[in-house]
Amino acid sequence: MDNRCIGVFDSGLGGLTCVKEIMKILPEENIVYFGDTGRVPYGTRSAEILVKYTISDIRFLKEFDPKLIVIACGTASTTALDIVKGKFDVNIMGVVAPSAHTAAASTKNGKIGVIGTSRSINSGKYEQAIKAVNGDIEVYSKACPMFVPLVENGYLDSKVTYMIAEEYLEPLIKAGVDTVILGCTHYPLIKKVIGDIVGESVTLIDSGKEVARHIRSSIEAGEVEAAARHNGNRFFISDKVESFQTAAEMFLDTKINEPIEKIDIEKYML
Ligand code: DGL
Image 1 (cartoon, protein in one colour):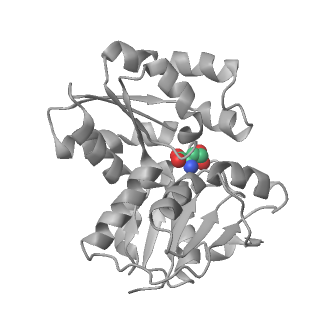
Image 2 (tube, rainbow, N blue to C red):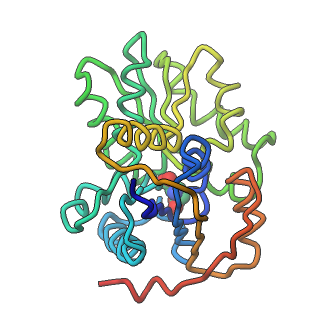
C-alpha cells in the first residue's frame, strides 16, 4: 500500500472534472490538486510557455512527494507531457493516451472526432495517439476555442452554447464520426449540448474519466500502489481564493470542505 498522494494539475478549474472521476472510482486515494488560475488559459499559449508552466506545476506538486502526477489539462498533456516526462523522477500521466485507446476500441466505423483547445488540436497529438493504436482509423479534429469561456461563464445549457456547438461540430457530423473525444477539461460540463448535436448514436469519450480509469488499471496491474485509506484532499490555486469555491464545486459536483490555499507558482519557475 502507498498512502502518498496523487498530484493533479490543470490550468485552472477544469481539471476538477478529472478529480471528480478519481474520487468516484478510487475514493481511498489522497489527491493534491493545483489549478493554475493565475495563468489560465493554457489553450492559447505557445508550446514554449506551456512547457515552462508545466515544469513549474510539476515542481510544486513534487513537494508533496506524490506517487503519481496527472496532467489533467488537455493542452498541457498534448503539448508538454512528452518533453517534461523524462525530466522528473516521478510517474507522470496525461489524458491523451487513455482517451485515444478507449476511442479506438469504441469506434465501429473507424471514424473518430477530436475536439479541444486550439493548441491541443494544432499539436496533432490525439491523432498520433489514435493512429498508434490503429493506423486505419480516420481522425477528424476540430478546435473549439469558445467552449472554455462559455463553460467558465456558466453557459452550460444555453442557446448560445447550442449555436456555437452546432457550428463547431458540423464538420465532424458531416465526416460521419461515431466517436468523439472530449479532449479538454471543460467539455464534460457541456456534454449534454454536444451529445444533443452529434446525436445519441455517437459515443462521447470524457478524457478525465479515461485517465481515472487508467489509474485504476495501473493499480490493478501493480504499476501504481493503492492507498490504504483516505486522509483528505488538498486544493491549491495561484490566484485569488474568493469566487474559486463556488465555481470549483460546480466542476467537482460536490462540496469542498477543505480550505483552498493560494500559492506563488512563479517561485517554481526554472
Ligand atoms: N485546461 C485546458 C484544457 O484542458 C482548458 C482551459 C485552458 O485553455 O487553459 O485544454
